[in-house]
Image 1 (spheres, rainbow, N blue to C red):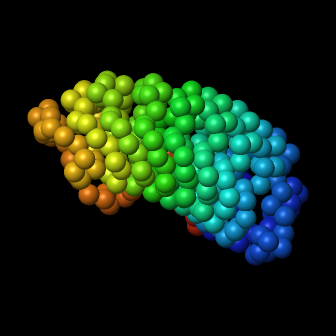
Image 2: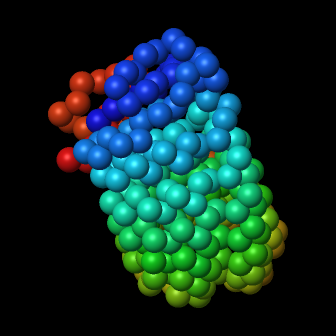
Length: 259
């Protein structure tokens, strides 16, 4: 694991020096074939995500959270076939989510909220193993793809503050039996609240658009926390994304977890 969070740095494949501005040093770490966890969070790169990261073919977890990366998400990330967690949260990323991410069949966590991503949510993401999808506060539009309802291990479904339209699947509760949080506030969704959500016995919170749904809230949801305003935490991060009991605590609070 390489942890280079909470710093401004430049680096090469053989040296990792903190304190050098990234525009003065090359962000070059490609070729570390055995590298499994790479953490570059909380930096100030102010540049595009380097495509040479994809030469680290053994990566399981890539954390580029809060790094001021610009431009589009590289399509080359779709070649990291072993990737399980991808953190792109809180950058300045633009354009569409590349369809190549649908090639990441082992991907369980996608954190890309608080960017400027546009276009529709990919149908191809239904080919992954996602159980935590966080795309809140972007400019995504269109309908929620039907393919996402095939992700039966979904725990967190966060699409808050986009421009999504259409209705929710009435079978959503059956499709997501492990769902804990459903955050959809700030979209243009219509239709009725799926009665099937009462089947999601682990559901703790539902956050819906304020006035776009029709019909009554199903009585079977009476024991849940249902809100229609912006939630306290729009883009929470999955707890396991920060925990590794074999790794000592670090100043950035991140302790990758993949063997």
